[in-house]
Length: 161
Image (cartoon, rainbow, N blue to C red; front, side, top):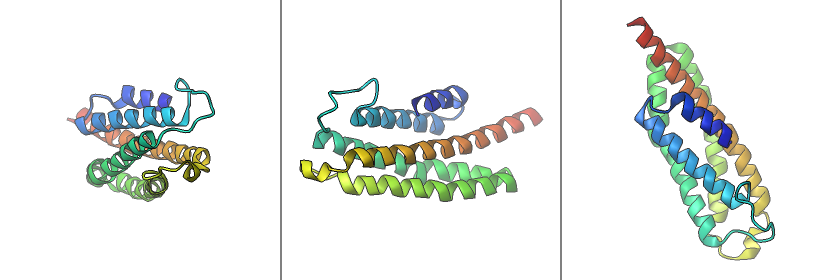
């Protein structure tokens, strides 16, 4: 996921302020995900679960990222895709449906863990983190496809001018 993020930042970084902000927020979310999951380079001793505060902080970042996508960036991308023609409008519509599924997975994770304070509430934490990671990976791929479409249409307009 981090490699995909680096590729996205190289490809589209600097092309639009909203996209830059979004990719920076994605990076913060991914770094925190890796820390919480104990993934390299943040591997711990493998025996301890994250603290309630660490989980709560991650859940807040997760909800902020999901919200920014739906209430800020997607609307801009979808409206631009509608302007760019039927093909782009269709892509935006189908991507939006699939993005909603990943949003639901993130919100369910938040509902389970944002207020967890007892270690017995964390029995399925590792499995739930893995499932969330898969949903985020799908989400980032879909988001990148939308950004690529927006970027390509903008580049095509510049070439025709």
